[in-house]
Image (tube, rainbow, N blue to C red):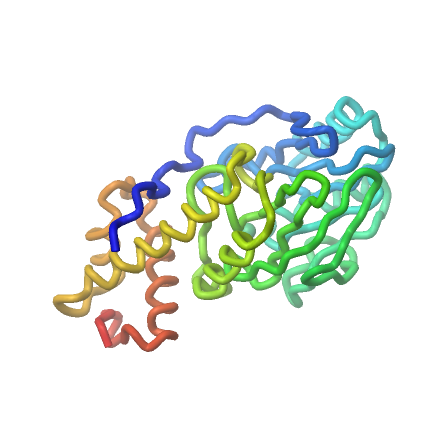
Length: 291
Ligand SMILES: [Zn+2]
């Protein structure tokens, strides 16, 4: 099999996005202003719908700058002063942390997400339970939830029927690749989630971080190919004998600056765990080798 030509090597670092932007007749975004190496300029929080009370999709980490911008963005972009409801992709702090601010500003509207016991508390209210295939509507927009675990066990993407668009949360990003956390992530589930998204009739992606992706299918396929390539590289790196994770990272991540190697190591451990689940590698004394 030939190597894929496109490999994801771009990153979030240095990306800039406006404070708020109208993206389509029914979608606008307000920047979360929680910048970082893995969040880029910050989380995109989306205003969705065409009515006077649209819905808010994700809420950032909860910084004052976002709470300042949100009512301004809502007024300017949607000519609105209130939200009908809040919808969340998953319980990571940079998506759920702003719920309290939104409630303070706009009242305690319902918050919809797939529950993740022990992780939903920062929302500050009990969540309204939704799961795979649930439909959430507001005037001018129909969202269908797609269960996409792997980055987080509670992750839902939302398919926007009217635009054949997908709110991907952290499953597919506008730049760089997704982190699969050591403790709570699962690369095998993540790959299944990507394949589930690829099977949808999707044209455009509104990611939680970075700019809008216009060619959705190509991006999702690129993500799948990237992980498949990494997997082949891992197996290649240990074919002559077991190695520690840091040594595997040094062999493979020649194109990635050293300060990102801890994140790369996390990604390598995800690959190794997936391969171990499949019975293809074994671990002995922190060294990983072929089974
Ligand atoms: Zn996340």
